[in-house]
Image 1 (spheres, rainbow, N blue to C red):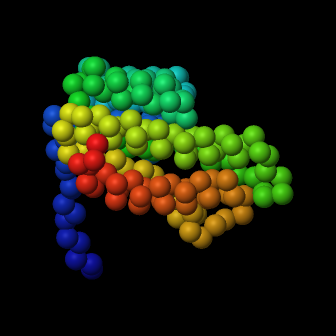
Image 2 (cartoon, one colour; image 1 turned 90 degrees about the horizontal axis):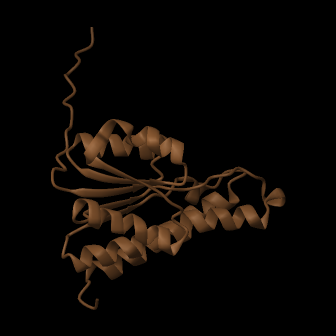
Length: 187
């Protein structure tokens, strides 16, 4: 007979924190929204998919603000951050989860799909990071910006040329952003 130790459940306290989660209409984004709200945070959930976003946000009432947006557009990225400030009076955490991940072989990939992947995964992460960092600095909040990547960025996988390379770009971008934002005295 095996000795099973009880597993201690880890709980988090995000009371008083304001969090942005992009890519909130499904999957990991939807789960993060739920977990942040349940841990006491006020959440700005953002996604292009209105119906999916409504389903994500429905249970949380006043603790959430939904923003239908395309993070690859400057005005949409800024709007998401503005909603955090106007609705919840601040911004503490920005989770850049939104991505597109089509699977197409290298020789069949189109430049339109490539551009869409990079627009969302790279440009969108850049725009959200920049907008969030400026607000965190302005309001003197010791914020956190979390940029998602994938193991496929290092190991590759058939059919993932655009996605894998965009995630590798995010890793490099995040390293530079962390170095620059660590000392924000030049802002």
